[in-house]
Each structure stands twice: as C-alpha cells, then as structure tokens.
Length: 325
Length: 295
View 1 (cartoon, rainbow over the protein chains, first blue to last red):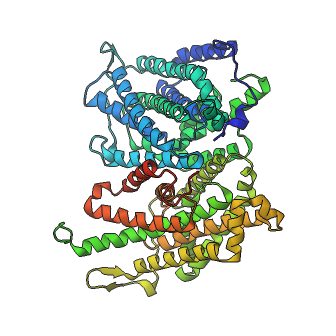
View 2: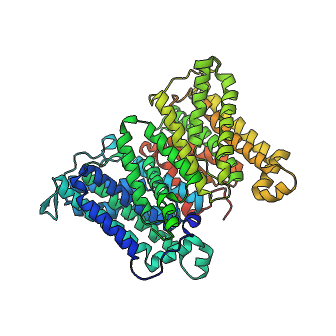
View 3: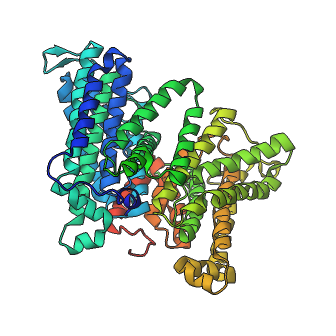
C-alpha cells in the first residue's frame, strides 16, 4: 500500500510548527492571482478549474497522504452535485446550504463505501471503490430525482445566505473562490495535523503503525470520509456554477480524470493536484472540438506519467528545490 | 409454482439463458484477469478494451479481408494476444519492480487510448456482425426457444474455461506457471525462463479477452464502448470470487450471470446493481472473496 512512498519520501515534510514560509508565499500569490483572475479570463472557466482543483486535492488526501487509491471518486463528486442541485431546485435552499447538503451526502456515502472498501487492500481496494461508484452511477441513471439521461437542469443560482444574489458570474466567482480556497486550506491543515502524520506513518509502513497501537482501519475510514466529503464540496459547488448535475459527473471516466490530474501534478504534494487540475481542464477546454482525441491524449498522459514521470510536475520541482511543495 | 409467482416458464428460462450468456462473458473475462493477476500481480484495466478489440478485429477480418467467423475465432485472439505481448514487452515489464497500482494506472491509460482510437475511426453507433450461417436459427425445446448461436456461446465459453483450467491445474506447463506464481525467483533459479513465461501469460490472458470479444460480436453490436462498462462488472465478479483460484473465477462468473438474469425476472430495476450489492455483502461476510485465500 506504499504507493507514493518512492515519490515523496525523498523530500521530508517540514516538522516545524505552522505553515512553512514558502507555502505561505505560494498560497498568498495564488490567492492574489485568483482575486483578479475573473477580470481577465471567462469566470465560468476559472470556477471550473477551482472546483476540479479542490476535487483533485481531496483525492490526493486519500492517495498521496493516505496511500489509498480510490478509483471511484466520481461517486462522491457527482453524488454531491445531484444532491446539491436537488436541494437548490426542489427544496429551494440557498447556495451555501445546498453545497452543505451535497457535501454531507458525499460524506455519508464515503463513510458507507469506505467502511466496506478498506476490508480489502491494494488492487482490490481500487476495484471495490470503482465497482461501488458504478453502482452509484446506475442509481443516478435510474432513480427518479436525478432525471436519468437529462440530469437536473437549470438549477437556480439563488441568493447567498438568502441576501446576496449570485446571478452575476463575478459574484458567484467569489463565492466559489471562498469555498474552494477554504477547502484546500482545510485539506492542507489535515495533512499537517497529528492526524496527517499518523496517516503518513500508515502509508509508509502499515504493520508498524499497527504495532505502535494505532487503529489503522479507523484512520483509513476517517480519511476516506474526509476525502469523499471534500470531493462532495467540489461537486456540489460545480453544480451551482453550471446549474446542472449530470451523469458525466458520476461516470467512471470522471474518477479516472481526477487520478490523472493528481498523477500529472504530483501525488503526495500540496500544489501538484491544483496544477494538474488546471492543466487537464484547460486542455479539455481547448481540445473540446477534437472529440475522442481528448480521451486519447489523456490516455497518453497516463501512460507517459506512469512510465517516466511518476513524481509529477510539482514532484520534480520539489526534488530540484529540495523543498516539499 | 412458476405461475404462483406470476412468472411464466418461457420468460424465466429466457432470462436464465440471457444470464448464462452474460455469465459466459464474465467467466472468460474474469478467468483472463485471474490468470494475468496470478503471475503479474497486476489488474489489467485494458481487459475490456482488448475484448472490444477482439470484436473489432473479427469485424475487420470479415469486412477488409473477407475472413469469416470461424477462422476469426482463432485469428482474432492471436492478433489481440500478440498486441498484448507488445504492450507487455514495451511498457508493463518496466513496472514490475514498482507498486502494483502503477500497473493498474498504466493499463487504464492504455484502455483510454485504445477506446479513443476506435471511437475516432468507427464512431459509437456500433457495427453489425452476422451470425455464422451454421448457427443461425434455433431449437424449440418445448418450454422455450433456444437460438443456436446463444447456445454455442455458452458451450464455447465452457470449453475454453475448462480447457484453461485443465492446462493450468493438470499439465506440466501449468505446474511451472503455478510454481512461478508462488515464487518466481526460485522457479527462475531452476532454469525456467520466467520473463518469457510472464510475457506469454499476459498474451494468453489478453487472447482470452479477444476470444470473448469475437463471441460477443454477433450478439451485441461491435462498438468501441462495449468493453468499458463490462469490465467494471467483471472487476466486481473478481472481487466476489477472489482471484486466488482459477475454478473460482470461472464458477463465480457463471453464477453471477445467472443471478443477474434471475433478478431481471423478479426485480428488473435491481438487475443493473445486483452484482455490486452481492459484492458489498461478500465484503462484509468474507472479505477475501468466496474462493479467495485470507491475506
């Protein structure tokens, strides 16, 4: 289960308290860029990137720091987007409550699936999570409230806290920025907490963590649930942005995409998944007219990434700079 | 008794047959996965794509070269197997020293490429493939109508499955294979060319997928997406059965196909998810799988 061992063990994570200065600077620059970004690029595109960045970061918590490869994260991403869309459209909830509903649903689903999936290790774990995600897909295809092939369309954007209208793309952008940036900082906090240290210990050497008295399965269930919940936040937010929840978000190819983003950026790094998400979403955006070529290119990136570039972009950068990123 | 449940025998038998046919594909595909997993310790995510490729190769042989169903039944698996060997030599063999999850990621990428290429050139509408003349028509069994070709699929899959089982469990070659599964270093020390064996094993496992694809071509339309969803169900089958046993993989495949068919009779809405529900139950009761060895 020590998948990310070889890629991350080279750069020890800082043991000093608080956030390293380099990370503070990167986060500050990132925030500054994101604050002015909607005035330069199409806000909906920027929001899409941010949602996927949070999704990939949530996935990376599980794979990069927990050492667990889930091949079914679309279930939480897409499941939450359905619940949030339903909450906003049918129950008439405000955006922040809709997102919370979606995240809570993803968390419950993640807890249920995670509790079963951790009973198998390694390759089986990946297959089990994939199979359960496919089950969620079939439920989404057949259930009444998901609208089958049509999905849930024209979800109202609503008023934040019932006061601030999010009809305007710029207003919505800052809501999405707050949610996703907050979510990413929250994940950062988890990774650098004592809980995160135990996770790393389990990833590096599970039998030893057991012998030290840690209840490994409990940690795995908690990290799985946390990862699913944050993936849910990302999916729920995306449904508010596009005013749509559809089968694309629960399909297995979405699970593959988030693996790709994380692999490309660098699993087990803080900033890798964010960069990976940015690259993949941008690529999809510009190559959308080429149809099936997008799938082929993604496949090629997968193959090259696995064969020659397992550290990912940020992983390589981190090795050069000799600093964890 | 059937009337009591409001299900007429022909409907029940029809769905059972359909289940048995699906089960045939599950069995051949999960057998291939189990054979590959045994020696290479990787899960071949490209298995569904190679199954689709088998069907396409059969279609191409017919439409471009004029080679019919029967030769294709032999040729297509050989071609797919050779393609698999190429993949193993050029890419997979570089990953054996790494965590096995990388093999899963690599074959996932390969599956995306193969499916994407076929989708690009042949679209997603599906191409027809005629049932061979000898097997057209059907038999009236009194209680139901059995199309000849469907009967043939079940028979052919059983022959291939049990042939493979016999080869692995009862022959000298199979003994080498099982020994290499247990301890490849030791078997290599005895002078057996283990890398060659790994290569041929992958080729054989993949050829099984190609064979299943040719069998499927006349039943389902030949379509780039035909393997993608199937492979996930086969993964669930493999989790339920456990990959430790060849016979286990075969029996679980048929059994789950039949259960799926029965579900379609009694609770149609549940037929798409019944295998996943069974997987959840098995994980709760016997996490190592029905035929698996405890880790």
